[in-house]
Length: 381
Ligand SMILES: Cc1cc2nc3c(=O)[nH]c(=O)nc-3n(C[C@H](O)[C@H](O)[C@H](O)COP(=O)(O)O)c2cc1C
Image (tube, rainbow, N blue to C red; front, side, top):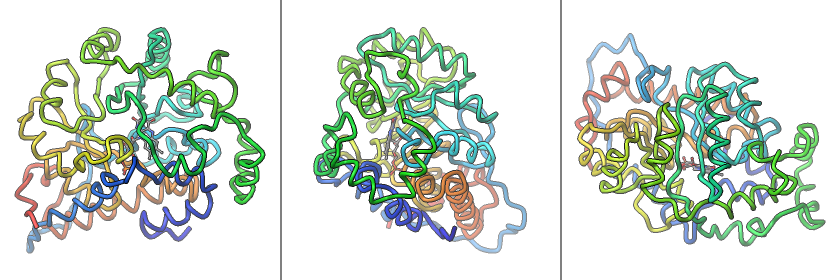
């Protein structure tokens, strides 16, 4: 597979996936302004080049979420990995484990936590959406505990789902079953169809045993989305904190005020995230929001980061601005759709190499040295 960078993987994913799924992954909310800003705003910062430092010994390992990881990034929660490649969750988990980094499984996954646990020995993390019916949340928390999940992410930027216009155009939003017209469109990607046929009827692993969610991934996902609790508030973080004694991360924080509230609510970390430009269109890019959040927290609370990461330099900039670790989203999903487990591994290797070369040419021999240098490693453009 000749994927030289994430853009190559994106093109390969576009060729392999039915349009309706490629657009679901690739698109953002409304005018996609925040989606674009997530990429463009990395350009507001330049890297400081330093020379003549012995860089012969280099180390990309670093600590985040209480553990040392081989790389400063991990695979974040993305829904329906099993629709982009057969057994997609397992493929991503194996690639992550081989690279010594965690994968966070989304609530909206084809594989259940139990299936994933059986497929990999790597560290497991789980992302939770809280439904109005708290019994479902309790059950998911119990499953997470039983599967040995160490870190639970509560995603807080998705109380309602924004309109993604590409999905409206493709009829994705209203889809609850495979119609004849959809079947025709899927048939334009025979390799993908074959892969899916081999993997069997996709269902949402977390709720497939609950008949009230219906049958098949489309109906189950639509029922799940409708049940996400729109009344969720800071009180509910207490509810969750009382039931989860592992690490608790609030994902989807974009303002210094909410970052402080997350600290007060007893979170162990936040993810500075705008859901990859899929929710509040017009919101700040994450790389623009990060410095003020880091300043407001002043080290009181750990910061993870995601949004538009496609290059090693993006990761370096987020770490310099105060993130302890970075979550990949679409970057690894393009790799997964392009080439399954090998495709994810290729993207991880590629980004690791870019981070390594970037640091070395900045005169830095480790990720920890970058974190220490912090903002001095960058200049505003
Ligand atoms: C197709 C897709 C599905 C996603 N599903 C979830 C999800 O189920 N839960 C969640 O917390 N975030 C989800 N996200 C958001 C990602 O975790 C992450 O915040 C975002 O993808 C980062 O931006 P990037 O893709 O530009 O790197 C999803 C993102 C995409 C692209």
